[in-house]
Image 1: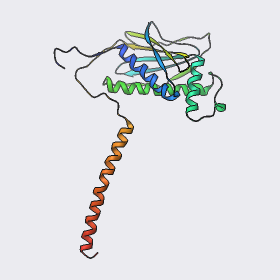
Image 2 (image 1 turned 90 degrees about the vertical axis):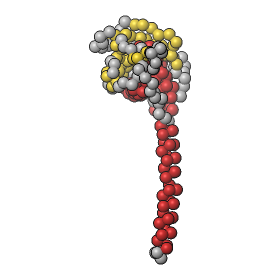
Image 3 (image 1 turned 90 degrees about the horizontal axis):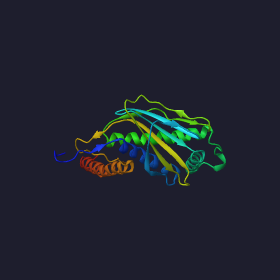
Image 4 (image 1 turned 60 degrees about the vertical axis):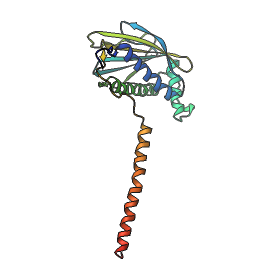
Length: 228
């Protein structure tokens, strides 16, 4: 980076956008439908678990924070049913209520995949490392709202509205230490495609086979010359 170029700075909104993209990516693939989020973000003063289903994940390392997702019963059941049906489950075998342990377990598994995708992008794009705890998913009644506190020095909190394929609504909340990442020099940040890596490995193996065959032919010719 030259002295005349403005430094590239990643702040709270950039980290939030990365998390939102992980949410839409994982859930869109899981449900085989289009999940999208609002173009507007809310500044909030605290994060809360709210009905009908709330989930939270703590992360720590290069920076600390908390992710909370709050699903309506309709949104949670749509995501759960779409995911399970895409996995080959029969509709008759699915849970019928959002308070079912199976729904909570599946939603927790999806949340774990979302945060896992996010932490991978943090490692690639921000060149730092964060760890996460196991997501905690709770079915809440209308009378219950839990405030989740974190040990953050200068916390910033945001809320983003998400929409499912059937336009059911759920919310993502992020609380994070006030932080900025300033790019010092260029680096590779693209995600490695497993299919591409597998194709490259197969191509390398295929390229090595003729060499082995040629070596075997030379050896056979040598043995033949000796009358063996």
